[in-house]
Image: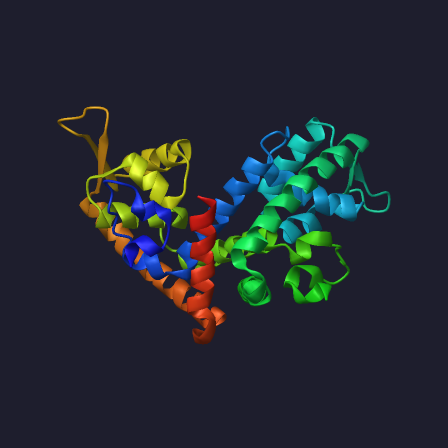
Length: 157
Length: 157
């Protein structure tokens, strides 16, 4: 059954023994996420911003004034990864960071006009990508699949 | 339905609008993978090696002599990410890299004795982690869930 798991093991001249990985949810989840991100990157190849910034930009756009902590939590990134991502987005002029008046330790984030335009472009690519994922998963299994993904997030957080 | 997707949106004082992300397979897949990796990292907190190296170590251990290209493909990493990972594993003395005699451009990878011992430790943690994922996904849905993950990998590769 080895060749059933992915095209990986089907490369000519290579017969890789995946051992327990073949049947481990954690590893297959990782491969699926990696493949999904690569496909999204291909959809977004003409957009001059890493598609990894899409969720961050979308959440700032829909929640202007959101704090960096709330954003990290929502995207599932740790604090230093988020700081690095936001620094890049500010340098590019897509995101603006201001301090709260009543609490100078807290930053508020919002999109600039250029950020809004960039978000619109990435949203088009993400929409195409997710339609493709919907087709792969299939209408019949979609709800159950999403329910399990959410259960993993809830129970492991 | 917003609070159903994850504990993220249920933080007190925060009511984040996830917009289309809430129902997008690509984003939920990413959150699930991030949560799964964080949980594996917690299981492996006493092991003195990043749990991100586990799949790489296991595949080298089961396929001694595997090429770097075959390994990158199997783990789903690009070439530069894999080079960085392998450099670290060689510096730590866990992996050995030799050139093929008949093709000096090709490297062959294998585990050292210290690498075998480290792999055994990480395998214990990964086994605990995957048992936990099995419990969350549930016996009834496990096969269907794995089948969809594999289908995503196959169709997007």
